[in-house]
Image (spheres, rainbow, N blue to C red):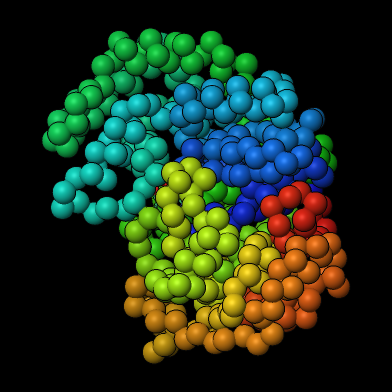
Length: 427
Ligand code: IMP
């Protein structure tokens, strides 16, 4: 068993960074297959907090190769800042990082379009991260996107920029934006990027395939979560890429036969940022308590996240769409800080995710006994083996596992790397 895919099973922010970081010590390669700097992973080790947006969480281990796959969209300015910050804190060596020739590049004009559309009066406000993710993927689908490989050939790059300029500038004008795509300025900007990026650029599909063939342990990290998937999420309130495990194949350039297991990550409760349906959202004091206890503010945008109880129908849907073989449950210690807890096992009127729109879903909530004891949170935070977890916590994990028919593989009981209960083997 050498290839493990780890994906979010909710609306993102499930704690993938922490889990991948905890597993990366066993991996030779950590690769990301989709998304861009809309993601944000908060890693905590030796008391130091580091947020990464593009570089996979495996960066914190010397000797672990980090790969950014073809399915990603890369903002070179953010990439550069992140590399500098990681190198400064001693977490990343130049030779450990690679980026695919085929990843698409986010230029400033993608960000201007993203922000302009979000601010547009009368438009559909998605609540995007305004990082240019949607416009870059849109250009890719329209076959006028600019790939990392284009940066290496200034004349080809110029032609691609010219192909974008009229369309982009017409929209910027319509949106009332002041900025314009100026081809010469962008070619000059990209020339500066190539100086430091060139040694990192490679055929990432070939690299991953060779690693798998050599029997190396490859950890593949998703971004966002199943319900934000472009095809299977709460469309149109989704991100513009594939967040499901299936995207690992196209986003890296490997076949499904190369994947051995798929772990999904869920918080012990649910959160969401941005617009769109969220059946178990709590607009009351409980929601506020969860937000404060769990520090539920976006790692990328700082926006407060909406919070609610765990939604088992949505989680079951995510488990099926990604073919999960194991589930990782995070922030169980935070749930234990609540004076009482509830869980959603079904929606009223037989509403089912997938078949029915989630904005029709009214959750049937069930209170669970045994919670609300202030000692529980610290007992959970100190657990290192399944047997150490107090009875209500173990019963909770059983309810989740039975409902979605996926075994629990790992439980995270705090932000620290050591605050992890390993139940199944990753590799
Ligand atoms: P975009 O990905 O910036 O286009 O935003 C589209 C939707 O996905 C918005 O609702 C964002 O809040 C959400 N989103 C994007 N990335 C993340 C993430 O890493 N965590 C949680 N939500 C995200």
